[in-house]
Length: 132
Image (cartoon, rainbow, N blue to C red):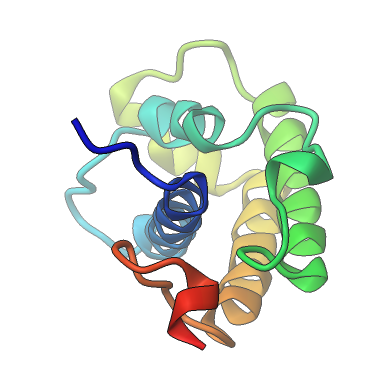
């Protein structure tokens, strides 16, 4: 069995974070989202070990600006989760959309997306240094 390069794993995680942030940005405008609100919020912790620790998001895969954007988004996520019940009923998305915390979360997701799109998705097959 081939051993996978740790940096490739980090690059793939970064790409999944971009997809997550895109999903947050699109969520309210989609008539039938692929995730429910509970899953959308829970999925953040699939990629982020909280609190956000710089050592989990090393350069060159993550830039300082990207790490800062993740920290801001994580803080907004925490506030949103604190403002919602542990289990959000499936038909209650519209109630969440009215929350100031939701608006802030989406805004920080937009800012994070802008930062990540500066470099776009990274290769999932070739380590960043090897691409230079």
